[in-house]
Length: 472
Image (cartoon, rainbow, N blue to C red; front, top):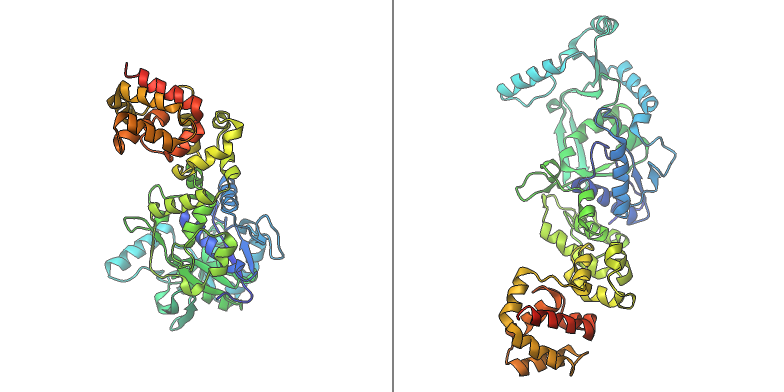
């Protein structure tokens, strides 16, 4: 069941295009907010100055909008807790850094990346988990002041209190307990003055009134750090839920695999947003209905209790299943509009609706409509190699007989086929494959009676004549 008042968020970093793992995270947060009229917030976490790009930000927004997600607060929508780009919130964070430092809960760290890496290697060699050794935590105030006065580069680290347990109830995984003795002091402000993820992510969630954070299980170890930060600053923590990762066929996280699937790639391939949304919604969540659902209907069935803890495996076959469902559900005029203009021009205006209904079951992507427009309406039909072999094997006599029968059944394919059967003695594949090959140029496709109806007597005759002539 959904909470009576809920605010969720999606907080992407614009360092690349939206991949399916992040898209599903956004979807689950949107569904949780939508299920009882809550608020879905979009925040842009762009503090990584080197990797953040405006074109990636524009792409993220485009991908979310294409999927049909809307947000009531945040980037592009406004709200009382803006700005909603972290790169513009330096003044918001500055006071918090100072309060932590003045209270002795944060301190400057002068360790270089090289020194930190050597320390981690030494800990691994000794069989200990790598964490900050506390080198700069032991500096005196005079030593810190002297190094700062000298202009030494320094990060700011949060001082993790020793000997405590951080306990919380994960809304997906249940009770969680972490010992602070296993958590090293961590960076909250980088040497360039920008806030680290642990800090800005947690503080913005709290200050923006986020009540629920659904995110990938790879963030589970971040949660105790963020809860300690919020406690030190007197800020409330949201309810956290860590959803399973999406993995590929090899079991590795999809978002980290070379060539990982992104929303842009699926859109360019011709997938419909309804197909992608329905597929993602079922990756790690069980729904009561297994048919194609609109976003509102998915939200009504969304339940935190049905979020799975086990990894969700990406299955291209299932994605194609939902694509077929989405194509089937698309109104004929909407499917027609997906066709390129050049293909539309091939279809007579009075046969547009009949064409769409004829080929719909044989189309996985809207772009394939062009293939069938050419197959069914081109003046010169190019036969596929296997179809040409079947036409040649049938022979001239077969198509002579078909042409003689045509006049008796110009509108009725069943009567036409029965007539050809009686005239030639052919039945089954020997009857229907040559007819299909001659009329459509392929051995696969829509039902023959639909093709026959769509072609009309004149075009059927020309194609049968072409097949007969190919055998002369």
